[in-house]
Image (cartoon, rainbow, N blue to C red; front, side, top):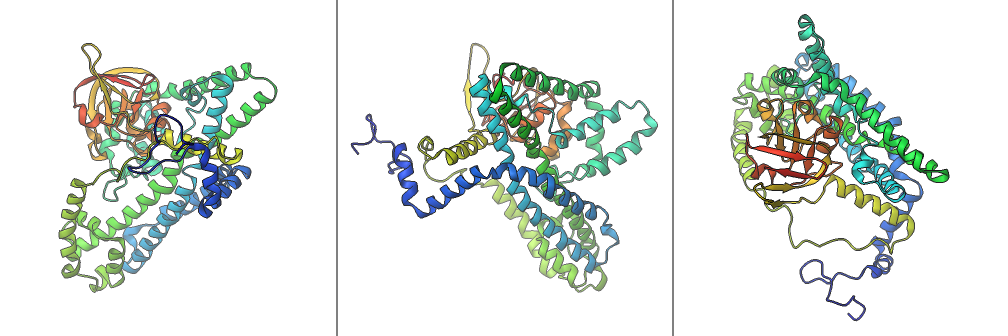
Length: 488
């Protein structure tokens, strides 16, 4: 204990002494599992594995995923007999499994390039992370294009073309699951939402924002290049090129590996549900979402509508009746967010070898800015209360609060509202252009709501921790997206 720093014993979990930072490399060498992980980190750094994964996305994963999705688009599920529909559901299940493997392989590597650029700009230019993000804003096209296409439709000026253009829009952008619930409609199934957004969005502002973001991005790059010379300039250009290629994957990944595969599964399950209602196996269409996919496949395999030999009401009906109550109980009793005492801050990485240290610094940076620690700080300066969070998208806006806890409430959003929500998915981007500002309970500067807010130049404060429970509909607030504060 004499070797520990004066002033007390550093502690992690309750009753456990946290070793001093200098002991970390010794412990890493003594533990076989830690040695394997250290070697893996060294190899990842030496071989540039994160950026290899980014390149693999563009050269291999994305083309293959597009081809698979195009094949599923050609399937008319209503025309399939029970056996073919069962086989299609199996293919949907395999697609989801394969897509999930790709999703989680590429979810973190793109963040490394952003972290490398941010570290360089902080050291050589003294830039904040928010300023660095200006070099990348406007490049997340898959998440922002649905809203911009709606703006083009709104600005068309020819009412006779509106219905045809909206039908085409649903074909092009409708394969977006607005939530992680198979029971929730996709964007294509929400025509009322599209019509509401057409009326609410400011199409002239949307038409300008893409070019303004591009101009801002180029201005920042020129400023950096004026201040750098020689090898530092070459390194900046290299890191910026890598980050521009990697940054869009943060949201693109979700559309191609989650939203679209999820939508195809939903459409197939709905078709089976219609047949199950008609046969009397379930009473209402939504009941099919209380069946497991394999149960639906088994019902189709044994005849379904055609042969009548599938699992009938005596088998599935009791399950369908019981499971809504189980789901309700689970949602009402989520349990604690974590178990046990918090371990505290991780030890310093400065004792690690150079390669693994740089690699782990990028990992820490990425996770910090995707899942920032919630602030939960409420202060009362003078006559106003203030909520503090993470500054996610610059700008100041004052307007009425609209608390939205799920996608089913999108119809309540009006132009100029301040969206207050737990978090968002990339597919929520369709409602962003009608908003004045965004406040979330969780997230970080690289979370989905932050990225989309910057794409649409909307002030955003994330990771407040308690905005949805503290703020109320109609309450007027001022959002400062640069300071990370909400005054009300």
